[in-house]
Image 1 (cartoon, one colour):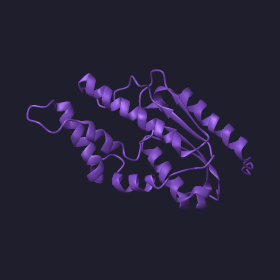
Image 2 (cartoon, helix red, strand yellow):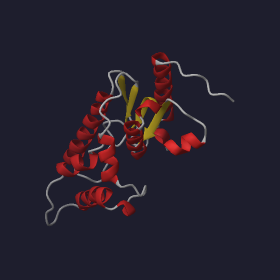
Image 3 (cartoon, one colour):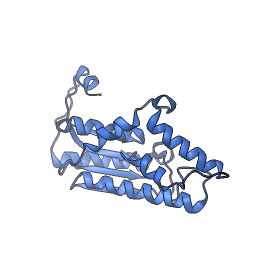
Image 4 (cartoon, helix red, strand yellow):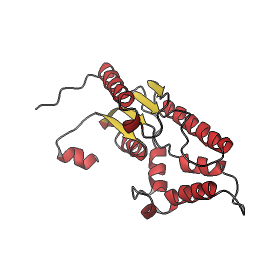
Length: 193
């Protein structure tokens, strides 16, 4: 991403916006190029330890367990161990390790846009287990606020993980808030046209 921005003649600092796995990429970019980042907007973002946290909340494998639990465990394991089996072809372990290097943006703005706690990331799970996973997800989203002393979280009332499609105005408002906060923190010169 840094090279693409450089080739395009864009030098930043940038307000970086990332959804889901893209939010993990945003955290990696920010950890590697902090001077090029003016702020972050994280949209229902993958947390660096998310797959491990979720997997640890699942019960141990057992004969006769529900297909939803088996499928969830398989998916979470494959996301971490088999990059060719996830749609992004992402080495999740390496990306998560790189994202963990991001400890603080100081007072640069961070906007965390979180899906509704009513959403169930893994369809078909028994409701108590689904609630346990969602509570952990909501807690991970809250932990992202620790990236900056100037952070804000907004939680969607009903929209699920696909916030850009399900609640585009919610996402647009969050991005515009990020733009305002970045401009207030450090005026960014206009891009010549």
